[in-house]
Amino acid sequence: MSQPAPVWITGISACTPLGNSFDEVSSGLLNGTPAIHRVRGIAVDDHPSKIGGQVFHIPCPENEDPTVFASLSRLERLTRFCLSRALREAGLWEDRQRLRIGIVLGLGAEYHQPWEEEATRQGITPSWQPSCVSTSMAERARHVLGLTGPVATVSAACASSNVAIAQARSWLRLGWCDVVLAGGCDMGVSPMSMAAFGNLRALSRRNDAPEAASRPFDRSRDGFVIGEGGVVFTIERAKDASRRGAVAHAVVAGYGSTSDAYHMVIPNPEPGPAARAVELALKDAGLNPEQVDYVNAHATSTPVGDTSEARVLTTVLGEHIRHVPVSSTKSMTGHLLTAAAAIEALACIAAMKNAAVPPTINLDDPDPECPLRHVPHQAQEHRVRAAVSNSFGFGGSNACLVLRAA
Image 1 (cartoon, one colour):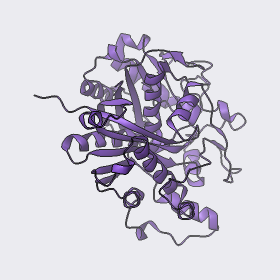
Image 2: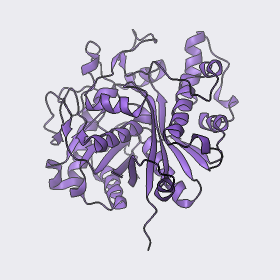
Image 3: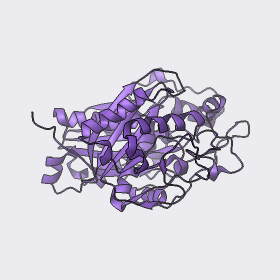
Image 4: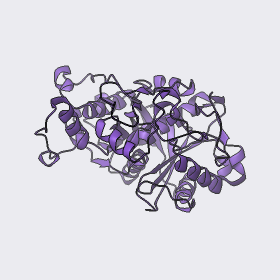
């Protein structure tokens, strides 16, 4: 039986609290730069959590009219920018109408966020209704970009972007597309999201020290911090990318997913279902646990979530758990919700390219219930050839992505 065709990442776009390019975000992650502060532009005095990781500037793509672009919702501007820039970064802009280029994005809030934005701006119940919109943001972006491939959006909670990347790989292997733009975009720092997660008591209330609020694996963690932003990857079959001389940033080597449906918001205390997702991803990548060089943990800084993931990693990696560095970059960016897995895949690629593992900042007192090889405060030099990126979402959506150095 022949091996499936390898798939490369050949372009990376980003618009995040740490910057608007792969280099800027990589530098921020490896330098341990915090991007969390008291929320600006939204009235948060009545919210239990008043902090977040925000995006303040979304560049207008070269192909868009600045006036029209400025009239779009923030989420739609973010989506358009990331898709356009990913094509340009891969050197495919001029070829975009000749190739079958698909789009698959983690985009879980594309209806309520524009509605909420208009309501906030007008101060009244807006006329915009989801039932009046016949196309998704991704479909509208395809039209603006002049693309001809299929379009899909994914709503699998925090796992959405990993699911999107895996879907892109499947489309390429099935021959449905020549290129796929895949990743996630989310603008979760909004009154509705902050109220909902705040009332669940899922958010950190360390309002007096925003930069220290997201502290995965630390004994004093008290909840996650909402972040926002987007990361989109250009993904191609290796043979096609090699033929045109494209740069390979990484290989999409493995993917595994499970759904345990244990609880709407609480992770399963038994590690089995989530561990199975990681095991499937490693098997798909043809790797043994001993070949994992780095784990970018889902770890959001919630008391139950971080300990649950530590059990998952211990179950899968066994004795190797003492040797493989594990960190959570949410300590710097906050939790980007449906875009979280995308920025964390970027973090894995940054680790490969720089032979250094990004840290978990604010990890002052590691929880003994999370006995991992942590990377506290500062990046550590470490050769990374194979990286695991975990995303375990609300409702039991477990997804694991394995990336390998090209």
